[in-house]
Amino acid sequence: MDRTTAVPHRSQAGWGPLWELYVVVGCVAAVAVVLVMDHDKLGRALVAVAAIVVLLIWTFTFGRRLLYSRQFGWQSTLFAGGVLAILAFALWFSAPATSLLPVIFPLAFMSLPLRWAVVATLVANVLPPLIVLLSQGSDSPDLGYSVAVCLMTFVVSPVIGVVITRTALLSEERASLLQDLAASRAESAQHAHEAGIAAERARLAREIHDTLAQGFTSVVTLVQAVESELDTDEDAARRHLTLIGTTAKENLAEARAMVSELTPTSLGDGDLVAALHRESERLAAETGIVMTVTGSPTLPPLGTAKDVVLLRATQEAFSNIRQHARASNASLDIDVTDGAARISVSDNGVGLVSEKAGFGLRGMRDRAEQVGGAVTVGPREGGGTVVRIEVPT
Image (cartoon, rainbow, N blue to C red; front, side, top):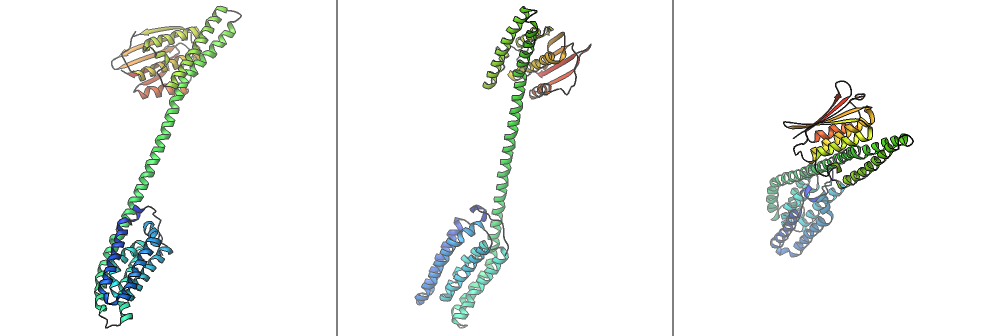
């Protein structure tokens, strides 16, 4: 016998409370028919009624789970065989038990694969006249009734079977689609969650690189300067120690701001140009580089996100000058054009070693792209490097 995948949920198999009610109502109607038509044979009629009750018990105890799950196997075969045996027993004692056939057909089609269900309904159609012939003979008055009912149900049973089978298949397909949809949604949610985690990690990495890492780099650079100045230039060493303390405090403030998801502490007063001037002064104080700031004294309101991009990119450019440029002069130019604000940082150092440089350059570009801006890095005329950060106004 064919087997199919189990469909455990009620709504998937097509069987449900309405079918249960149908079976109960059909059996009650069959009991009424038997008692009315065989009232003169009350003893035999009561035996047939008992058989109908047994059919109900058989269906709601052993068959109910099979009908809901549509698990085709030896258990479903046993159930269908039991249904036919109970029908035959009821017919032996009362020919009007033929009225059970409309109940038998759905049970057969829902418990067996289609071709075996067709066989079972054919057997059920043949049973009434066959049992009347065996139990009462060919001259029985019940034979004509049995044959007439069976001819009618023989025509109706395929229609019932097609409707039931089609309904069950559509229900199973719908359930499968719903399961696929649920799985697809779960997978999409998982991917979105993973993408969110990756984006947050990248954001935190940029924040740490552009704030804490640069601050610690400054501290290390200043400590090295102090070590060389302790015995030769005490005043310079003191200045650098003061800068170490200031840088450490600002790093601590940046860490707290990052935890609280606030704006950079350098932008605490909301003035980006002032913050850029302070960064330039710090670069000059820490390295001794001659620093020049030119361009517009103000910028139009850009919004916090764009202010942060310009500030962080400038800080990264200054960090590269500290660590790699070996420059003696650097400049910061603040420029506003129609539709854009541009920061240019240039130095007369050794120049750009590789445009594939590291995380800092990638972070600068990622930040700028997020607000519709861009970062370009290239050689400066006469030697050195120029970094341009541009965002729309």
